[in-house]
Length: 180
Image (cartoon, rainbow, N blue to C red; front, side, top):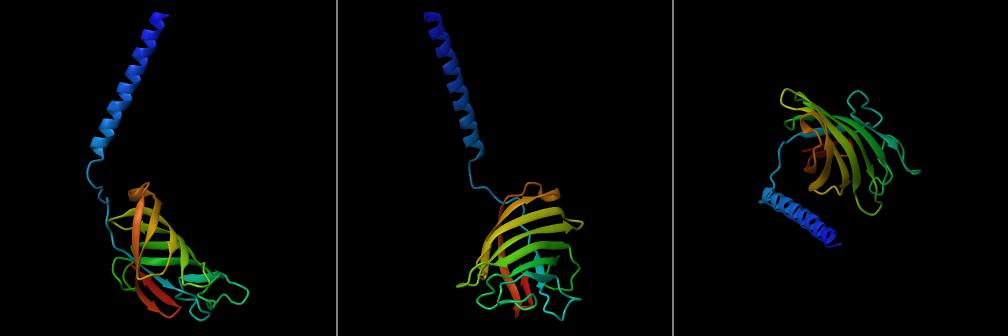
């Protein structure tokens, strides 16, 4: 019975020692603030179909409330509209620049009393500098500057996580907007 007690004590001591040393090593590697791996600036250009611009449109209303239609955004802060998009991504704010990829996804206007949206989209990049995708999702209160979650990625952005800062760069009525 005494030998069993000694063996139990040794095993317990060994486990405590190993768990304590690995915790110390984890603390050493996490010292200091973490810096972002990549900091990039892109622009994506959204041109909403309005019934007359089918050739240039990059987004369309696919769902509308009973009082709305699919060519004009609904009143009451566009509440209930669902829009899908396939927008060009450029490295400068010129719509006619050579695209480095596509922004594809959707946004929906989700509040009657306040102008806000919810976004789910991916950047698909295929340039000489960057290849792969970055996926974003989250609420967009449509302020001048706001943050949205980076929830994944592929290629050069494999398993990307973090925050992306969106900024409305230009707005032309309900038909065109540009995000940085």
